[in-house]
Length: 320
Image (cartoon, rainbow, N blue to C red; front, side, top):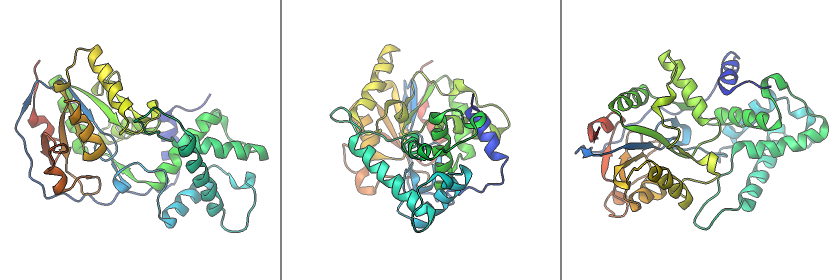
């Protein structure tokens, strides 16, 4: 047996650990377009950068900043007591671990296959599972009552490393908007790049912020399309085809789908090609992936531009 995600998050929270935080929110000087869009049945939210603020504006497995990598890897080495089972090399332990990590990441990216038009996503647990495979050759051990089997341990290490490398936060307006939109009867789902821990940690953080459990009914799991489940990046064609199949089963037409994201290229761009309605969320300079030139290009231009999550409520006129 191992701890559940909420139990693991609680257990970690009790330890005297410090986590990085995203830089302060920097608003974007943009003009909202808030003409209502009637008939929307489902709102698809991108995850990192849209619902969750994150350092670098997007989920990353590796950053080109030695100091940040050093801090994240040293914390991971200490937390999971890895060094005793690692092959000893001259130099700092974190540098040796980083060379292994980067080597395995590059190898997985080259060898993971997928269909034409798709891009594979490497999960953090895949990299750490390979590192554990090497450690086990030198009698590496761990507390199975907390971390369970090797696969679960790799997931826990991936989460710990991620949280040591990239700060995350949910701004209060996000939770208020999700709740208010749910009460209108419009369905909502996550449509984005995630790790196995992403949604559980979002729900756990939401409960800590509000003091009440985050209702699973707010996000319709049957309509969510998550990259870690598909093993594909969001810019993959299969990502959108999977969503279309789910909509079709429920009688949802393309023009009844509304996608909200901070990214145009490879994101809202593809949603627009499928006849879905789109909104560019320009609320934070950190996560915004669009330029004024992009907004003038017809194939990229979103149906609406909003500067806060709550403005999504103004756009929708439920058909119920």
